[in-house]
Image (cartoon, rainbow, N blue to C red):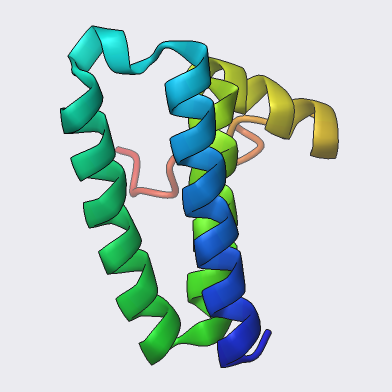
Length: 104
């Protein structure tokens, strides 16, 4: 993703977040002006990231807009699990259940 595509992705993501936030009524919970200000501040940060690292900034903007539309972490986790399948939980233990330390 080049710089122009990253900036386009940031702009589209901001429009999606603003539009969805105003239409869905999410602004009633925290206040419409606070929501618009917060999305604007996020847009400024994403635009700066898109200037410095375009490959990261564009995809990060898309990820933020998907998370905003999905409505939170629980729904976003469901979307990710459905897209890539459930990944096994890594507990840090080996196959035998030990952590690799010295046992006495």
